[in-house]
Length: 143
Image (tube, rainbow, N blue to C red; front, side):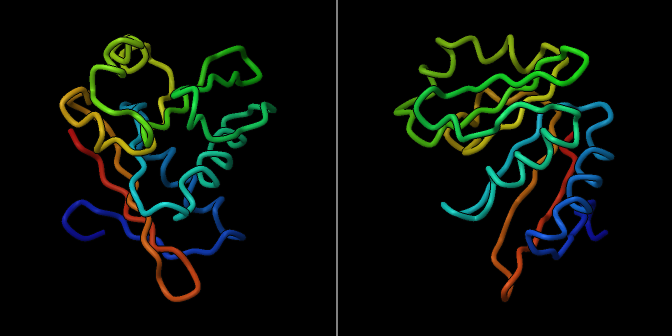
């Protein structure tokens, strides 16, 4: 771990190791921001996370709905946001983003840079970068 940033290099077959570390980092902060280029694997990683949280729900990108809600086997909500298509932060404000962020439930956010001023003070960031034929995952707690 360098400068408080954990770096993991993995391919799609080794996402479980990445997910385990993300969940370790989110013991207190349940808002997780995912950054990376289009097609970097954000939704694929979130699918693996939702499954690891004991949900049998089918995960897909909420590109047009902005948020999808999944449920774990205990009935707890898991929220998955995709802000790629919003035009301004007001759209996120109008949907009540604060209520989601402070609900105590997991909130997985794709394209958080589109709502920068609405983010809570504490969150975990997962930056995904291409690395040879694999991906580099940079995990950082922001508290």
